[in-house]
Structure formats: C-alpha cells, structure tokens
Amino acid sequence: MPNLEGKVALITGASSGIGAATARKLAKAGITVGIAARRLDRLEELKSDIEKDGGKAITIEMDVADVKSVETGVGHLVAEARTIDILFNNAGLMPLSDIDEFKIDEWHRMVDVNMKGLLNTTAAALPHMIAQKSGHVFNTSSIAGRKVFKGLTVYCATKHAVTAFSDGLRMEIGKKHNIRVTCIQPGAVSTELYEQISDPVARQQMEDLRTQMTFLEGDDIADTVLYALKAPTHMNMAEMFVMPTQQE
Ligand code: NDP
Image (cartoon, rainbow, N blue to C red; front, top):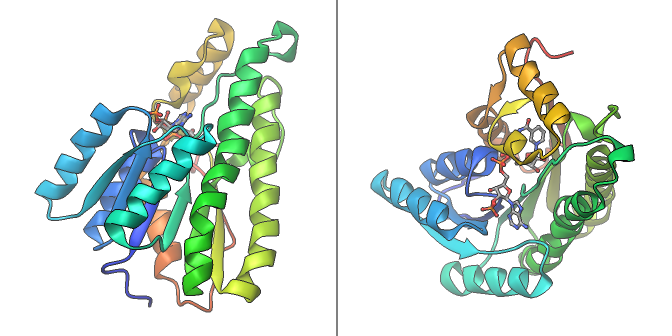
C-alpha cells in the first residue's frame, strides 16, 4: 500500500459536499490538503475543523473557470507544500432544465466549470506530477457521464466529456509518466448540488428522488477516493461507478 503520510492533494469544489468530505478524510490519512473553491469563508471553516483534528489544510480561493485564478492557486499550494501528489478535479454544478427553456447562460456555466475548469486545473497541476514521475488524478464524472437522461442533456454532455477525458488522460500519462487516473461516477449524493437548479420543475423532480431512495453521502465518495489511493501503485482503479443501492 502506498504511504499517504505527507502527500499533498489539491481538491477543487472543497467548500461543500463531496469535496469537503474528501478533504476531511484525506487529511485524517495524513495528507496535506489544498482546499480550493470560491467561497473562502467555507474553506476557512473547513481548515479550522481539519486542524482541530490534527490535520493540515491550505485554503485556496479559486475559480476553476478562470485560468489565471487556477494558476495563482496552484502556485500558492506548491509554494506552501512543495508539490502536488494528488489532484481531485471535483468542482461542478448542475443547473438542470429542458433544452427548450434555452437557459443558455446555465449551459455555458456548466461547460465552463464542469469541463473547461477541469482542464484548467489539470493543466496547472499535472506538470508537478510529471516532474516527480508519480501522482494520482481523480475526476468527478457522474452516472450522467455514463448514460443520458432527459432534462439533464447539457450536464450529461459535460460529464460524458469528463469520462472521455479521464480515459484518454489515463492512457497518455499512465505508462509515460507513472501517474494514475481515476474517474469517479457517483449516482445521487446528498449535497448542495440541487440547490442551484433555477427551473422549479427540474428542482422538484430532483427533490422527489430523495423520497424514493437513500442517497449516498459525501463521505461514501471520500471512502472511494481513499480506497483507490490505497491500492498498490501498479494498480489503477480507472473507473469507479458508485450508486445508491436503490437507484436504478
Ligand atoms: P456541491 O454543490 O456541494 O459542491 C460543488 C462544489 O463545486 C462547491 O464546493 C463549489 O464551491 C464548487 N464550485 C462550483 N463552481 C466553481 C467554480 N467556478 N470554481 C471553483 N469551484 C466551484 O455538490 P457536490 O459535492 O455534489 O458536487 C461535487 C461534484 O460531484 C460535481 O462535479 C458534481 O457534478 C458531481 N456529482 C454530484 C452528484 C450528486 O448527486 N450530488 C452525483 C454525481 C456527480 P464554490 O461555490 O464555493 O466555488
């Protein structure tokens, strides 16, 4: 099992949900966590909780859709922690609506954050892993990155892009640079994700889902990340499709 003590992780979307839960678990395992998002107040609270538990956290105010902000954030983490061993590309949003509602601004935001944001952080962090010939990249795709659902069309398009990018990245940097790539594809997780849905019908549909099953928790996905990290280094958990037992 790889020794995780003293490793450095950059986690995007760390101010809530899956990212915050993963930051807590990784810090407990002895990893220094660079916690990145736009809401600095939430990151400061998380850092204080992690430090109370004896962990190490570095807050990074970062908008993944903004290349300069990403470069500055990654530079700050490397200056403080020396390198990046683990990148968790997790920031994302899901403002759902039917295509004929033409919520074009929301389509663009999903492309900018879920797809281009992930490319921006990968471009900024990967050279540090390449330089040390080791590392692990995690990308949060979704069940929506495996199949398409009506009403989630643009979100599905962005998450299919994440799945495709993950597999290509794995093939390009696994053998050449000894870097693992894991694509995580969760089903429904209980987080703040549904709160940004501006379309009342789509919002209600997602809220109704909660009454039909027990959702996963952010902690469940955090455990998945830790499981993949702890696998022997010759073993890459390339895809992890994690579903609530009752979700079809
Ligand atoms: P949350 O809404 O709780 O977390 C989303 C995170 O993304 C927040 O920390 C938010 O931080 C961050 N974020 C959003 N926009 C930006 C931006 N421009 N720059 C930097 N950070 C940003 O939801 P989840 O934890 O559920 O979402 C995490 C990932 O999991 C997403 O990629 C989502 O698509 C995916 N996912 C979620 C599922 C679910 O059912 N919840 C299922 C499958 C996948 P801030 O606003 O502070 O910037």
